[in-house]
Image (cartoon, rainbow, N blue to C red; front, side, top):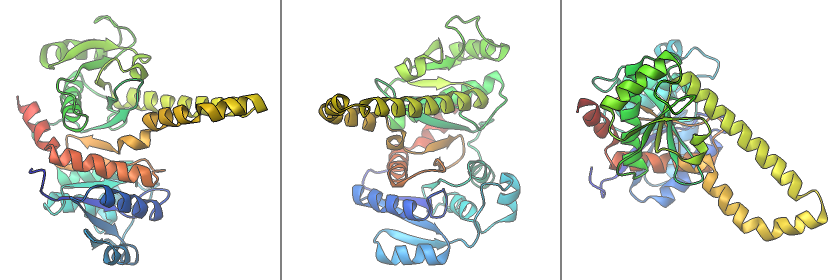
Amino acid sequence: MSSSSPIRIAVDAVGGDHAPAAVLEGVTAALAADPGLEVLLVGPADVVSAYASAHERVEAVVASEIIGMDEHPAAAIRAKKNSSIVVGCRLVKDGRAHGFFSAGSTGAMMAGATLVMGRIKGVSRPAIATVIPTVDLPVVLLDIGANADCKPEHLVQFAVMGAAYARTVLGVPVPRVALLNIGEEATKGSVLAQEAHALMAAQVPGFIGNVEGRDIPAGGADVIVTDGFTGNVALKLMEGMSKALLGQFKAAMLSSPVNKVAAAVLKPSLQSMRDRLDPDSHGAAPLLGVAGLALIGHGSSGPKAVASALRVGATAVRGGLVERIAEALES
């Protein structure tokens, strides 16, 4: 797609804990940052119509139903044909939008994207990827929850798709791809890990072998592959540990008058570090392997996360992410 062509991203106005206010604020910021971005705002008429009438480059698409977090994903997708998630996925399927973002039910987004958009030819299992901030360059980690049980060949596909995402969105020319394991040796780990290692070594360009959990925040690879169960546990552990450590650090810096003075001196550097490591700066988690761009936001997404998701979505569309994944899998 030409860099001058407008990018149309559909956005679920009512998805997430802080919707619609946080979603609308994020959309406003994204539109201001990217003059080539257009938004199809999906949701109830009283939410989307008023906003669209007051903002250029926004079109209202009315969806009268909402899928709740506690609903069975596949059943809800089939029953609520006019829900914001189904309508958003259909906009991509029909070619009216280049991608769709929602911070609503992750399960419903996975089911909707797979059932409505369909899968890229040859993809056995779509996978959710996320970008992990590190001390150096960010790392793509997948799968983080779409597939709790995997076969070795699934991990090979995850590696190929993750590498395509790293090239397209993060600008890594030749991504270093690694397998998450309990040791660096090829013979370590479960049967799944050992068989996946052998297949990846033979089939995945840029494969550098195994990495351990401690290597994720250190930036030991550009793409790290694992099954969805392990990936989700690793991600949640890092999120929880990061939050706890930051809380402890803040408490220590405010614990005495002397520490408060030191905190004031260090504040600019600490703020810069916090901004660099902030996961909200790296956009939503894409569901890779579906025949369209599906961006899954965290349920607690605020305006910054929404704006970042649309920025990443526009970058992915301009770089032809879906087409790159299809070409990589075919080759």
